[in-house]
Length: 338
Length: 259
Image (cartoon, rainbow over all chains, first blue to last red; front, side, top):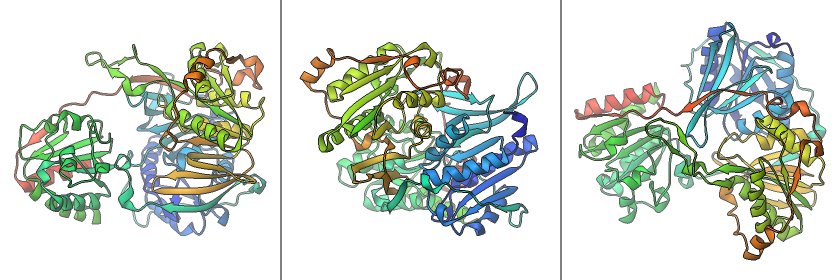
């Protein structure tokens, strides 16, 4: 394998039901930054049925080129079908780096391809960089949590190409859409080996939002005694809704019957690690902290400035949640509409 | 039906503590356990054995002390246990690991291969799909339900926001979620018997592999460095007007790319 034959950064543009997933835009944002340091191109791979019209949105988010494979075979994700298509693209175009979202799709597809291509894959990365080595090369480095999140590891893939990584949704930042940005759209046809299609979708059921598990939520707006009652939780729900998050609760509000046990965070409830945990009117008993202190970013709003929750919060606000939460909801709504 | 279950011995990462002064991992006293998703996979295999009749073979790759989890598998109801143990396997990343396991499985008869979705020490979820590719088998990952059909299997897969039902024709590899399969307890007679049964210890010579693709040599990824997670600096608390508080929160959430 001649490493210098491999160029450019490719991104798997994951779509579901024809909707390009946010993680694809986030990967494009990162790929753009990396490509600008090496002078390479960013190429998105868009697979699906009747999705060609979505290619321009990928260009607006940072792609220089979009390879489109538009066929009924790729309408819904299936491992073998998608692996054959991406394998064909990679063999034909020889990218240096390929990025995938660390979703149930990306984490199913990428290792299959790593094996087909006999190359390295780094899962669930939180940081991707291209750095200069001592012997004057540019090296792609992927950093990820290991050992249950207790340790970080930086992994390289020195001798094989492409170098591949998956990244969780919400970790990288997408660029603002640059309307009218120019790029190339390249349709491609794949010579599928249909004899290897052994799996078929019988049905796909989507959960009712309310039955979702709080441990899966990326954003939790959590309420304690200071929320008072169900009316108070409606304010929290409003804030959770505008951010695409869920509401959770301290033990106090479960014991008094305001919230169901399924939503309880803490030692006798659930352990959560959302990207954002907003503790509203929660004092922060040690049993509660045990269930949420690993959250990515913690905001606490409490009237009592001596509340222990402020010791684990990244941002603490001493104030009345009943005033601040509705104001914040309105303000974020405006921000999201931008 | 012949079912092969791949299991791994892992440190119980939930009990790992960080040295508060040095910021390093304290590994002493951390118990070794059967990886939870793998144990769920073994439970699925044992349910199949009860329902349809099957021979369940457990396979692990690891040092001699990994024998413990194979005996645990015996005590739960497994029929045969193979320990792949050889210095030549050492230093393997996911690709080299999956290659060795697949090389072992190639020498066995199978109708179904089950693995855990991911191991709690690495959390990569790569070994299952990579084994399936080495073996040329279809795979279904994130499995929360499975039954046998006339032609193959009917499988439920967990997605981020729902459940997908898939039908697979012929032999396949499933990766299983621990949350869907509460593992059974070992029986007392099973535990006693487990220590009298034979765990087959296989070296690289006994499996279908090329030596250059094993262990550190066969691993495309290398660890450049590892370091403890940065300790969280204390946050700031503000006593300001409500308007200022809202703006403060907004600017921080933007800075963290949350909104």
